[in-house]
Length: 279
Image (tube, rainbow, N blue to C red):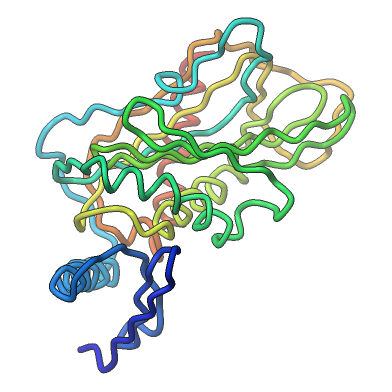
């Protein structure tokens, strides 16, 4: 199926494999010490590519899955300012995994470069990579804006844990009147986070479960982004408790690529329904 496989090694940097085949040209990132280890990792990646090329498909969960939410690992500390209102997305592998400490140490070094390569952050944005409780977290500071300025959505962080869960969260659009959960804009924002996670190239297996949530420590409206900045708004005051929708089914890896738009629409409807039920 794959007509050519080239390997480029870069000393003191991450190694990458470039392939040309039925799915086009692409790159995946891995570390390896021997030819045998490389061959094993290439075989795993090719199986993942075959799965990603399949149509989007949904399956029942084989068991309940526990999500580590943003509130579990990014709690506000002391007198720190409120966390910006954000939509959060969590992708869990369909089968259990346990990354060794060696792999997690490598990811701490590699994730910032992969995040910059994704185009989801500005070149001037400072990135902070840390190890937190066995997970690697890369954060981007929230850009400051004046009270009456329109605030565009911004990626705020990614996280990947030893159990394979990979998460991304981003601020919501808004203005001086608060954040806006826009039923028209939210599907595209969620789809972008799905593609970002898929593009990092760190998930194992061919099926995933996806949880989605939204958190706010101020005013948030369900409405349209158009017409900002607003002079008045019918705002929804939420408690500081985030709204969290755990996964209830498995989906193929196409959800993190060609199927991201469809899955984004589904997750958006589910999240807005959960927010509306809180009103």
